[in-house]
Length: 229
Ligand code: SF4
Ligand code: SF4
Image (tube, rainbow, N blue to C red; front, side):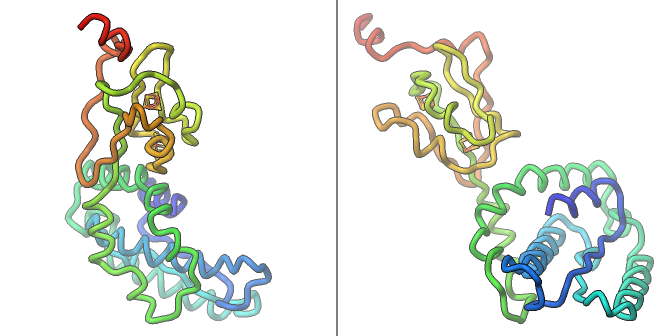
């Protein structure tokens, strides 16, 4: 998915993927099913951000089917010429298109985790129904964000040590902060924050509040707070 996204971010008008016939993969992984699922999902994402999904195509063929390769690529080129330049034909200015593609890029790890089961399945047709428009619209409307409550964080560093994406800003005695641009929304910090603190909150469909300024991140230890009181 990231490769396809990158092509569109670089202004490519159409992406064509050639793959071996389904059920004829030489490897047990059957990666062509995975590629097909990725393409179908990405087409729905393209629809969601206002791009024509016909700009992306997957074609199955064997190494001996040069005729299919020639015919399908010629047909694809004809289709893309008819659709026209990326974004312009869809009425999107360049800044809007760039911003929407960047937003999708940030969510790709999250989308892959959320859709993990479907992406791994060897889907049977009709393929257009594998990922529905409603499902993808909901996916974007209910994006999850994790946020560390500054009132509760005790800087124990557990989340920082367990985060697989190095997305948590940590310093000794400082309230920890999630870098939302790096966070892949795996939920590990939510699970590992000790129950006595419960400082990590899961937000659905709303963005995380802005991080505290650096000079206000000093942790007030709960025990000391009681002493002062
Ligand atoms: S949700 Fe996952 S990636 Fe994001 S900050 Fe927490 S542990 Fe790191
Ligand atoms: S695990 Fe919880 S208490 Fe510990 S640093 Fe992370 S958010 Fe703060």
